[in-house]
Length: 140
Image (cartoon, rainbow, N blue to C red; front, side, top):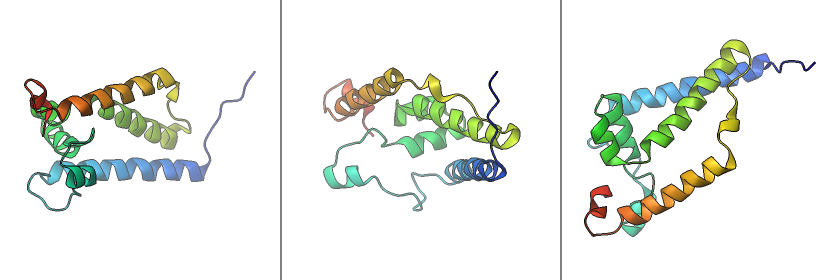
């Protein structure tokens, strides 16, 4: 018989703080338009090389998604659903850690899933920087 692992008061406090920070960031991204507001950082990789990294367009994509524009969100970055799933899962896990003392099981993110996502991200990055049709549709 195994004892159920429960979080301490300090761990619950950190979990609540983490969930609150994530909610705050989502609020800021939803409130301010990243295309016009100057408060968001510029991608250093894009600034130095002129090439789009796998995360380029992610903030604009989240903004579009928070405003219900799914197609525009995917147009900004095709990796958005995977990132959204991970951060949504993390948010729910943090909130559950605060509320009930234990979060979700992260074993669903097996090494195969993680490496597959990184592989897809690498291929996506290479393809989105090619100047040929249809790959130029993935560009910023």
